[in-house]
Length: 383
Image (tube, rainbow, N blue to C red; front, side, top):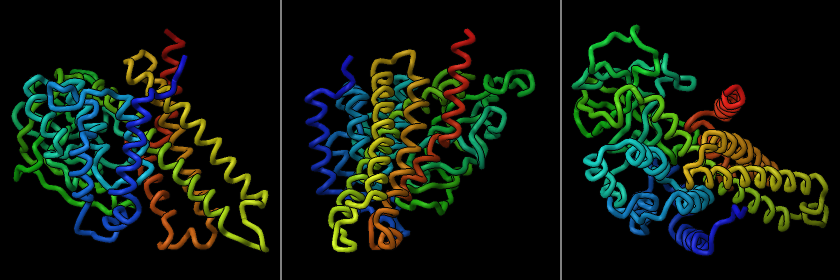
């Protein structure tokens, strides 16, 4: 079985790398990082939309390119490599995937073309505070007409125009105690421009990916998917997003390895390149091994996602855990290889370290995904 990308997909990868080398990179990321008034680079966002990347996996009937998830994985890796400061993952991996999985034809027709054109930005709001979201700790409520509750933190919630919100569905009037916790949840589509939605920007380790607290006070909302299937749909969306985020993490890890290798070749100590010292060689070798493990798991996840295989829940959890561990390790060792220079703001190492820590928490921490993997394997083996 060949898990490698096709020639066309590799060509797309090369095109994306050239585009991002010209339009993105550390200078663009630093511009967002150093300016608290902006949460993403609008020029890069428009450029990505013009390239058609936002609609890579969206069907042509809804304004997308209709390429598929494999092509989206290719783009995700290059965006991660460039540390792109745009709300791509929230809009594409979460919001668009939710619409394509469970949206009605009217919802798809109304939003997917605008999303593919870059006219709207989406986000996914499930968390309500510390810890991983679970059916029992979801307090936001929909009473059949309006939504009330608080979601925090919400990735790209500071700049999003629309949100998918996980909330208790009380539209049938049945008390929560009369049903299982997960059966009382649904997903809802909310326009964040309405005055009944209040957002507060949050400070995070990586300001190039904004986060916000969203408060809903009698906000108008409409259900996405079947009533009571919100938790099941949210888990499916997270599995899709986990694979795509894993590719971003692989791209960032590879960039860290290349930065560290280049520095080790050019930095001299005791009249010889530091890369010739055994300690540095071991660091670079360990980074390479971690990346290859993460890449192999990510490729497995890409196959499962693109073919809608039954193994997707296992592949998503494995790829997410391996890629998170690899990115953190590579970002850390990149700083260590650069020595004292690596800890300064003048060197770009910290851009990757910030993003590694942030992505490790988006959609659930590595510990959460490792626990998911174990539970899913136990459930399969017990069946």
